[in-house]
Length: 220
Image (cartoon, rainbow, N blue to C red; front, top):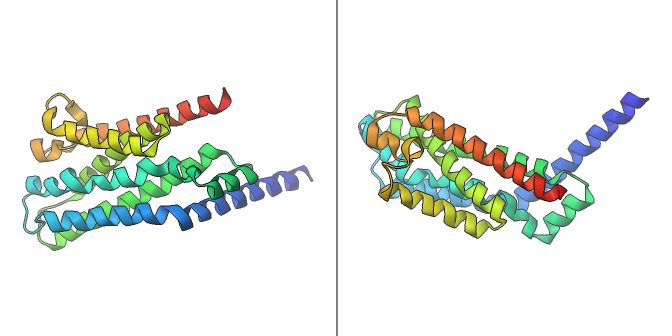
């Protein structure tokens, strides 16, 4: 009997989270996905992706495609500005941060799909790309997105989060030597993807810290 009640509660919780995410996907994620696709298309229009060397192929990936991370991850906390989403979360008694974590997961999956597709298109255009370029694309976009995510989550303002991510992006032009392994343009500059593992780790750390800070605020 106790097991049935526990199973029932878990099933209800999963159903509640499913309804919340469905509302979010229906009313909010579409615009962020559209922005990411626009970045994808704009990168195609502004950069040559045909018959590039391995080093040259990193330029469109690191210089512009990385914005996909910013437009997908920075607005994770934004839907609660909508009273409909906020009321659904409260009515379902769902853990708000768990809902946000689910948003992070499907945003990262979308980021991976878009960046992998872009590198695949470069390969079709006879550029010399490999799995390293997929890693480069995903890691760069993920880290830049994590910077915006942290700014938005801690300051509780999505616009400021985007501004922080843009400021960090611009800093890579003037402070590239001082940013070390967190230089977004490392593969184009050095022809190396070793730094990208640091950027993935850094992005995970930023997201984790943001959730810890948000949890601490909620429990005060």
